[in-house]
Structure formats: C-alpha cells, structure tokens
Amino acid sequence: MAKAKQKTAYVCTECGADFPRWQGQCSECGEWNTVSEVRLGTASPSSGGRSRTGFSGLTESKVQTLSEVDLQQVPRFSTSFQEFDRVLGGGIVPGSAILIGGSPGAGKSTLLLQTMCKLAEYMPALYVTGEESLQQVAMRAQRLNLPTDKLRMLAETSVELICQLADKEKPKIMVIDSIQVMHLTDIQSAPGSVSQVRETAAYLTRYAKQNNVAIFMVGHVTKDGSLAGPKVLEHCIDCSVILDGDGDSRYRTLRGTKNRFGAVNELGVFAMMGDGLKEVKNPSAIFLSRGQEHGSGSVVLTVWEGTRPLLVEIQALVDHSQLSNPRRVAVGTEQNRLALLLAVLHRHGGLMLGDQDVFVNVVGGVRVVETSSDLALLLAIVSSFRDQPIPQDMVVFGEVGLSGEIRPVPNGGDRLNEAAKHGFKRAIVPIANVPKNLPAGMQVQGVKNIAEALELV
Image (cartoon, rainbow, N blue to C red; front, side, top):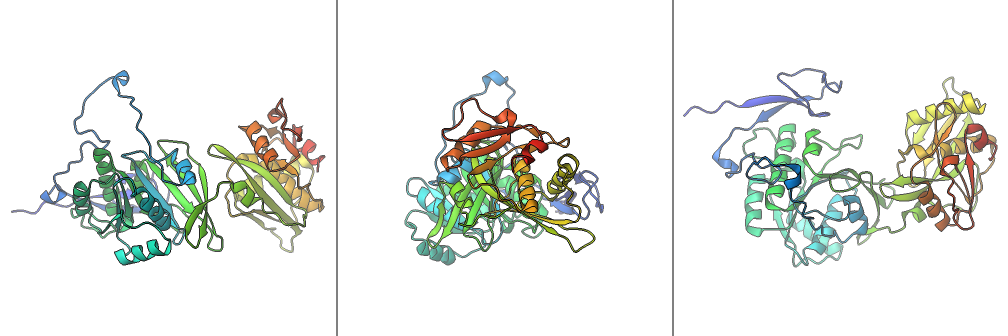
C-alpha cells in the first residue's frame, strides 16, 4: 500500500500567515527568519475518529438566523481566587480553552495546582503533567499543604491518549502542563515545533468545546515576554493570561491579554509566600509603600486596569549628562513615549533637557501602558530637574497632546475616589475630568495645558 504523501506548509510564527514556499522575510508582518515549515498530518485511524468538524462545539452544521440562537446563560464557576476570577472575567466558563503563560519560576504550575486541588473538592478535575513527574507534583502539593485526596493526576504527552482517558474520567476542568511538550501522532515533527503546538492546541480546544470541559494550557514565553509558538495558538483559544513577576520580588501580576468572556487588560496581584500564592486584595497599598523621606521626582498617579483604578508611584531622575548623546531610560513604561513627552516639554513648557540624562521608573514592577500617565511623568521629570518635591498627598493623571494640551481620560471620577480612599487630599487632573461633586476633603485642580500644570509644581 502506497504511503500517503506528507503535506507541508510554511507559517510565520509572529503573525500566522501561510506561504506556499519558504522565504526569509514574512511579507505580511515584515519580520525576518520567522517562517517555519509545518508538516500537515494526513487522516489516519490513529486520530481516534475525531474529525475537524464542529470546532466550536457543534457536530452538525446548520444555517439559522441570529434571533434563533439560544441565549441561555452559561453558569461560571469560581477558581477560589477572587483575583484570578477577575482576570478571567468573573470565573471559569465551561467549555473554554484558557492559555496561561509566564517566565520560568513565575508560579504558573503553583497557581494552577492550588486552583485544581480546591476545585477537585466539589467537581471532577484532571491535572496532566508532561514536564514533571507525578512525584514532583505531589511533593509540591505537600509542601503547600493542599488537599490531595480528590485531584486526579496523569503523566502523559500524547494528546490522543489524554483525550481518550479524559472520556473515561469525564472531568469538568483539566490542566495541560505544558502545551510545548504535547504531541500528536499524525504530526511527524518534534514536540514544541510550530506544527505540533499549532495542531495540539487546536485539538484540545476542539475537545473542550465538544465535551464542555474547561481546559487550562500552560505555555512558555520567549525572551521578550511574549508567548512562544505561532500566533494562531492565541487565535484559537478563548482566553490568554500572562503571569509575570521579577525574580527578586515576591509579588506576581496576572494580566489578561485576550478574553472572549470579559474585559481585557484586567490585572490580578498575588504574593508568593512559603505556602503558595496568596491574592492581594488591595494592590494599591503595595505599590504605594513609600519611605519616610520624600524627595523630588516622585509622583503618584492613578491608572485604570481593566475594571478598577490602581494607584502606582512613578519616579524620575534628571541629571547632567557627560555623554554627547544623553541617555533616555524608561523602566515600566514606553521608551518612545518618554522621548515624545520630553519634546512636548521643550516646545510648550520651555524646559530644555537636551543635555540631561533622564531615567524613569515605575515602582513595584508594574508596567504602565495607559496614556493617563503622561502628565504624572512630566511633573516627575520637572520635579527632579528643579529639585522641588511634589506633596505626598497629591495624585496626578492626564493625557498630554503634541500641542501641549491636557486631554481628559476615562473614569476620572472613579480614579479620584480611589485616591481619596487612600488619604490623598490634592489632585491635578485635566479640566474636563473635574467632577461636579468632589470627594470629601479633596482639592482638585483642573489644567488645560502644560504651562498651567508647571505653575502648580
């Protein structure tokens, strides 16, 4: 019997674009050396009779109008962590595929093991490990003092066999640790390759939809912090979260980057303790742990993370440069944004910092990507340059435009209320964000442009 010819394709690992042949540069995203060969498996009896139809859970295709779609609410169930539930949009949706990534040692396996041990107390749960032995997982659970009499364990890397055993166990939730070591028999390439990661993730997602099983997949990250593997891996799953934290810090941040069942960019904060991860109910108090001595260049701002405000401290240091090309260093915020704001400060604020080194740091290891931090960043730079401390009871937020105007930001009232809860008495905000009813005991100063803001510090 003639052997079926192996079909191949070439896929960009950055954007997921397909090409008929290999090429050095992806013509879709412009990246170099990201096109890899993908061997497509042929239909064989080893697939267990599972077809590619019904990817979203339906086994029969039928055309219907939008009004005929059943809108029955699918009940969520809690992970037993309020911060985890917040990032997932309110809890775990049955039949969803969730990808959790993070750097080595961040605590991905620890968080999932704690969650699974607690959920196994009242629902069938299956933990599949492909990187660690069962003894290693059991030793971790014993060290964390977790209940171990209900959680079902499996050490396997074959996705077909995992799904066959799951059909017998019938779990409501399942963990795959990790997706990079799983493999399909039909795919000839090694585990962790583009083709294996792509097909195994699609296979498990299809199984989750058709059997109404919530599946957590653990994914590795690259050096720049993005999830390893092709972009189609993130496209086929329902929710993608990243667990991040510095090696010298005991705090971990869980951020949602994609969520079909809730808001993205939600932030959950955990503390790594001796008995596992503990959720932090009031993260603003952590990021505002300021010393007794208050120097110049320090400003507190209010950022909006998902559905809640968060108070963080931003610091700036401006010093005379000994180099012909002064340095611009930003930790926790965008480098290009810093250069843009320095140009606005020179043009519309009258401060020339072309011969100064400028260093910016967001305290606590949190990353600020929201434009509401513009005004606080500028005032921190001016405070350091003039060596004039900004009052400790002052909070600042606002977006800065290229023409020097201060633009309003969403949820201004909620940001001020959060600041008032933590004892702040004064605020500098865009004039359009000044509420009619000020928080009790707080003075709010609205500004229109950079010149007005600089007169207040």
